Amino acid sequence: MSWPLVTVDSIKAKVPYACVGGPFGSNLTSKHYVDEGVPVIRGQNLSGSNQFNEEGFVFVSAEKAEALRPNTANRGDVIFTQRGTLGQVGLIPSESNYERYIVSQSQMKLTVDSARVDARYIYQYFRLPSTVQAILNRTITAGVPHINLGILKALELPLPPLNIQRRISDVSQNYDDLIETNLRRIALLEESARLLYREWFVNLRFPGYALVKWQDGLPEGWRFGQLDQALFLQRGFDLPHGARKLGDIPIIASTGVNGFHNEAKANGPGVVTGRSGTLGVVHYVHEDFWPLNTALWVKEFRSVTPFVAYFMLSDLNLAQYNSGASVPSLDRKVVHSIEVLIPPEKIMALFDEQIGPFFEQIRALQEMNKCAQYARDELLPKLMSGTIRV
Image (cartoon, rainbow, N blue to C red; front, top):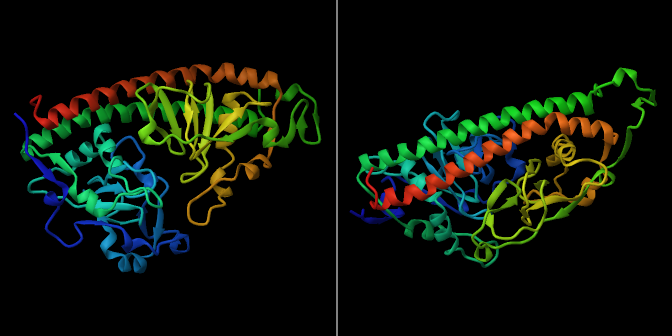
């Protein structure tokens, strides 16, 4: 049995501003941000593995939020990226920390008719690789690549009865829960390694620190130098979605894995950080990879190992060096001039030996997540189309 196809426009709630995107928030800039208030949903809040990422929020005052009332989103709303990293989607969970949000000018929101539609089902459908590709195929390329509200409303999807939607959502949630559990384990392993890095390389309590000679406040063999003496950052490479070919080489953007390709541009292990869009997040890549043009990647590990480079860049809080007026941007020339403390090779070798097992576990968990995501994305289209009954 196959389920009927319906348009997004036909499943929105019958309330004002149930499906909104575009100009309402176009005057929102960094000058409107305040320390506390109503959170603003941006692309980075849609880049997590599971529904919605509340980290990295910026806020506007209640008065500004009132002026942007059409762009108000609530728990249960589905959020789409309109421009920038197209294909991103998020679902504001019912247990979210805020009662309302403002959707930025680069996002769109959909409030579904809950009597007919499970919002989780819509979220899960729109993050499927096939659906993401369908959106990308409709991209308007004039100016900044984008989609508009008309394109979103016209998109079609299969809509089984509500009870079937909920059962499909539950199946997907089981995979998501496994992935999320593994991500928490990965975070704990990384935090353990990070604490060891700071103990050795920031607090300078490395093995044998009490026995070495110190001069000018530094242990023997340690030195200050510019970052480009420790490593060399290079801008990533363009790879439009239409040019990507089936493969298992990860494409690394400023926010992390952005897809896969059949060709690598850089050898692993590698270290990547954001150049445009999302700044300050650093990614360690175990295998060969393709660094995207929104990222900077370490082309040369000149005086540090990949592990040390990863934590060194992570500790620099690179977001503070933003040089972009509208889109956050990182100038590698500025970053290269930052002064860092460069440790001796023998200390770095000991450190790599200590944290190597942590990263082996991290890699195993990441592979498990990749398999779970693949299984989920293969199964869901069959459930949603009615090919397989749930």
